[in-house]
Image: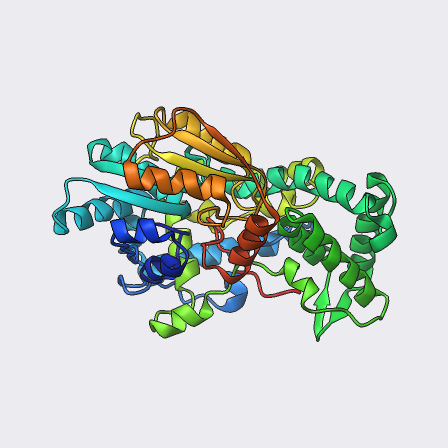
Length: 437
């Protein structure tokens, strides 16, 4: 099983046991592993403070010089603390480790279930070892051509149609929520609150919420319109000095709930972030410009194109100051069989990302869940998706053609719950900013 970059894979191998269909559990042994540099596999560290781990930094003219200094400092600290091992913590090497596990287990081929970053790991494995890939399920998929700067930017690009969908949803229910009876009015209500919070941050349970915080929180929330609407209503209440519901505001919470796992295996506090940078910077250094001015220009341009999150996505990152990759990036283009599974409304790996992987894997089939919300599809209680994936795992036969399923209220609720509790891994890139909501 494969999952998000920087996350504990041993635990991930155990979590789905109660969720997978009985037929699949009878057929397979589930094996999770900690990739090199993570958890029990000689955990890497950069000795980063919590503030240094915060990489979700919106572009601002007055803070950009400080943000460049932060990015350089993170890269320098990683080299100083773990420079000897950083070049070896890459997806290509993790794929080689997977093949070593196959050999140790005495198997000629392996079957694989990968979520999020795990889809990229699975795709790289099929590229390096196509003859050893048996039944591969790639759930909530990364576009290999955009690893990794482009995948961060997917977040901004994918959020804009989701935001438009949300304004329409809220407008149609204006009598219930009072945000405006047209999408344009809901849009205005949102940006007015952002402007208010930029002028005077909203106090919520001892935290001060800025307009940038609202943009960053809504980026993921709008993929589930009802949850986003309820959360936004509560945020407006807080701004007006009224009592707000912390439970409904949970839709704004990021996917950084891994502290307990780090403590349980006694790994460095910054291990997830340190191993994350090692992979996303080391996999393909050519994707990251070396000139800070390029990031500044891109952030300004993308804030105009994608107002919700464009400047967060395109502004400076430590990869600008990382050492060059020791190997070229993996170009995924092969005919190994695989099944790609994707929700239409996924905040972490948007639908076009999965479609791109489908195109790269020439013999793949794709299951698209129309109306599907959340990151991570299988299993969700949806008879169409669960039946297709389980059938492939049991028989090894891919569907004759791509499959389109429709989400149910129950499967969407399950996906949203998974995203909150992280039983199905959340992000290909961890949101390590301090909690805001």
